[in-house]
Length: 164
Image: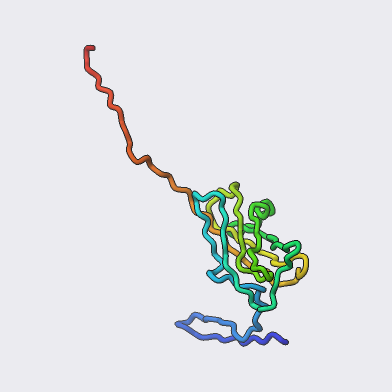
């Protein structure tokens, strides 16, 4: 299939607005995330485990059960900076039905991840049996820490009496 592009320019008040349409659709990932690709980490939770429900795009998509083929983190970036030391801090596993149909992706965030911000994970869903499957992108949002004040603040006053 050839990629056909049509370029449309529209003049808007002297500035040109350019749009691209008619592109061939990219191959979709083997699963879609039911609630979107952004996951928020609870600041005070321990262990920090996230669950993202998935739906297979193809009803025949199954994960090998014995041994279970877990997804791997191919690349991780913080903000837009790729860092090779970050991928080991995120562990991704499948939650499967009895027949091997994926129900959810379980993401465990290591306690060493303290820096607040957005972490982008690129996942290979079946690295051993189907390494050429399209990758899946997840965004993990780590919130900033919050200081908590004590419920009651007791201040002991010291009274100075001159001459004593």
